[in-house]
Length: 179
Image (cartoon, rainbow, N blue to C red):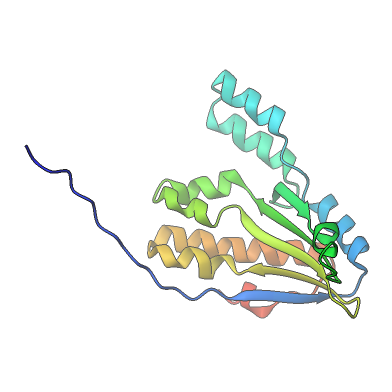
């Protein structure tokens, strides 16, 4: 009898650039603008499409309607009150923001891209009441898969984030538009 193989282990080191942008607005003001620009995932709608076995073009159309600025909120959590129990000051709401139709264009090459899709973002208010928006640059995350097609979509996501920031009247880091 042949012993089953334990398989191989692959370690991939990669550099990720985190971009943190000071926002000229209050925490609540920017949070409200962000959540209007990036609406919640319409789970009932997409669950219905899955149940019906809808074709991908129907999913593309539904997603475009759900994501007017290319992104959807899949999850959010305000950690302010919980961390306040420890006496911590400052505010933070974290998000999973993305677009499953964009992720699909990478998924076909390597489903493990779901480690980074949806993107993690956070809106933070520090102890001095300054508001910050922070996220890891998509191209630096997806470039770690060493697949040209995935890397190309990562750069496209950089550009889409730049467009979202412009829509939100927030500063746009040059790193998002250079590639």
